[in-house]
Image 1 (cartoon, rainbow, N blue to C red):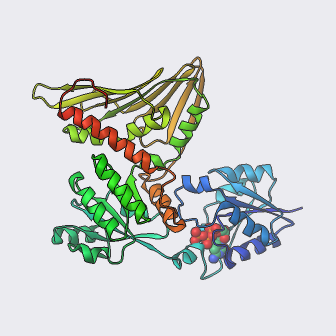
Image 2 (image 1 turned 90 degrees about the horizontal axis):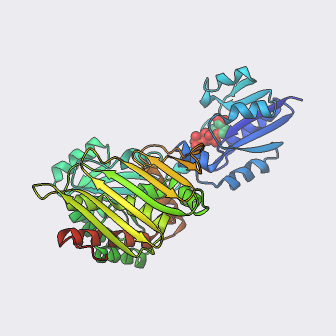
Image 3 (image 1 turned 60 degrees about the horizontal axis):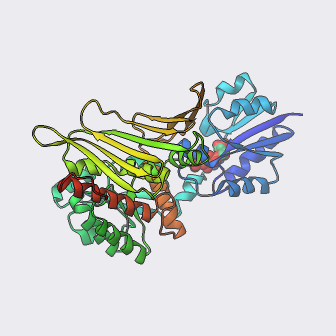
Length: 441
Ligand code: CTP
């Protein structure tokens, strides 16, 4: 019996897919079809898939051509599939010519001519494209232009800047379709506005965008005032629009996994979560603005029921804030955020439990890896979650899904969480600006 295997995403199933399955089947007696899994697609940064895995499998099944359907879950799986199923021929479209020659050691690799003039990409392009406009005051796009290219269905179209000449330069640098310094004109053809100005202007611009019926993605922190944050969240909800705070960490796979594992007592009962962040010298506003990820992690892992927050700021001779330790006190556990601009402060996150420890090294907010030492340190477990680019594409992807499905609230970062984080930041800032007595925030 000749066994044939072929792989694909098979999104928006089309004639090209049918043809390659048919021709693959004709090469042997038994056809195995590998359909790419959602997590595999996420990990390799393919965020344009429209159909769910179940739909894609069902569409392959309905052709009646596949004798067996498997899910392709990780890079390198092809070799083990070929060996495991004792495959004779691996078939793939000519767009992959040469790419699978390394499998010739295990089976015969056959590249078949693609069907002309049809692809999932082409079909996706016929669907609605959501236009994004950037409101900025600096020549930096926050990587949204590049990151958006990996998410089909959205396109960064234009930029608004108060200075018309700079807007034009920005638009040229990032190859956007248009630039303007007139807000009315800017809002006209947009679905989503990305606010990337100085902190002081983010609230006003976000509000204007929402009032004009646009979904908003705002650089974090959107504001350090809880009243203003509430106002934005309420307005968005009232108008059934999205207001997304750009906290990439919340959109990566690692954080929910870590939280889940800790809740399942991976390292026993939790004792301490310690987040350290090293920053360039800044003022107290800058320091507080760097606290978002740490507060998010503490609240996610330890919960909202802290009894008190205490603070130990350290100033240099010029009376500049150079270091701060903020302690969240819970019953039987603590959360510590250490933030400083001395070379001695390193980026690191450590979680201690009664039966071990979790380490998230270096820039832990770009969370792609962590390790757990259970019991005695001989029991080491490593967890890794690849993500591509800056991670922003995952936030864009999630935003697009919510817009298309008509959901106002992010599943990944709830409005209450955003509000709570700002409320804590506001309290810390207030204390820093007033006095340093350890009063409850
Ligand atoms: N295929 C084909 N002819 C087409 C499109 C796809 O023969 N017109 C083949 C591919 O070469 C691959 C398989 O079908 O071997 C699954 O392809 P997949 O990547 O799922 O489909 P595409 O339409 O190429 O998707 P995309 O546009 O997202 O790359």
